[in-house]
Each structure stands twice: as structure tokens, then as C-alpha cells.
Length: 188
Image 1 (cartoon, rainbow, N blue to C red):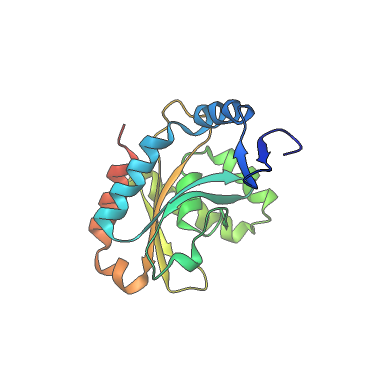
Image 2: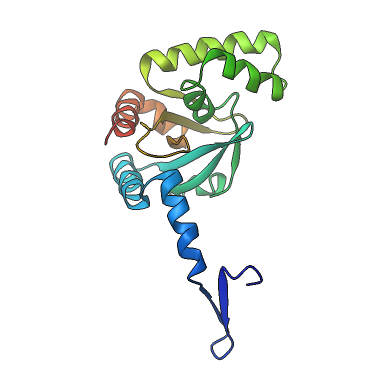
């Protein structure tokens, strides 16, 4: 309200977006692309897979969930705004696969990744660059994630499409789900 992004209607005691928010919305579309296309993509992958589907973007040394469509059985672990380590996660590895090796090394230094672990990171990144998709268990949970970087289309921010669900269910359908994410991430 103080920055004039929202107005307050005292008679109905509600907050409403102000015209100033329109400029903010234009900036968001320029950075992340048309949200309708991304919403359609998330909904399509969720309907096909039956699993929670996320859209993430890098934020410092983390990946941050900016949107998701989920299922009841694993929604408590995935929420908008959740930050996930770039190192050691399927989503992060998918993003790292889009960077050059020196960029990965600089990020690893900032994240204080040990040299022994960095060799494993480069091995996994190489696999993702070859296969187009990353997957693995979430640390400390019974969830398995699959992720692929979205093809950049007039967006400034890199985006990663992800899918997650219970390990037993995902592993049972892993080849088909990997294909689904890989193909969805390359759609125009």
C-alpha cells in the first residue's frame, strides 16, 4: 500500500492491485515469459504424470520454486518460494547443465562445495548434458525428483521444469517420466 502497488478500499475493507502493478506485470512477463504458456505446460505435465510439477529458477546458490501444481501426497514438501540447494538436487543439476564449467566452479566455490564433491557434480552435469534430464532422490525424504532445463524463449531468467513424487511410484515409471519431462522442456 505504501509503495502504491496495492490500494485499500475502506468501504469493503479489501486490498486491490493498483495500475502501478501493471508495469510490474509487464516486467515479470519479460523475465519469465507468458505465464499462460507456462501454466498450460505445468498443467499438461501434471495431468499426464499425476505427480507434483514445479517451475524453478536460480536464486543465488539455490533453486527457488516459483510455481507448481501438485498432488495431495507430496504437496507439504513443495511450496511456492521453497529454496532448494543447486548442488545435490535434480533441479539444481538440471540448471547447472546449462552453465559453463567455469561458471559451475564459481558457484561451487560460493556454495563451499568440497573438491571431492565437485568431481561428482561435473560427472552428473555431464550426464544431464548428454541425456537432457536429471533425476534422483531428495535428500532426507522419500521423494524422487526429475528435472530438465526449459528451452529459453525470450526470457531473461532461466527456468527448470521438475516433477516429484514418492520414490516407489516414480522409480516404477522412471523411463516414461524422464521422457515426459525431457520432451516437455523442449516444447516451444
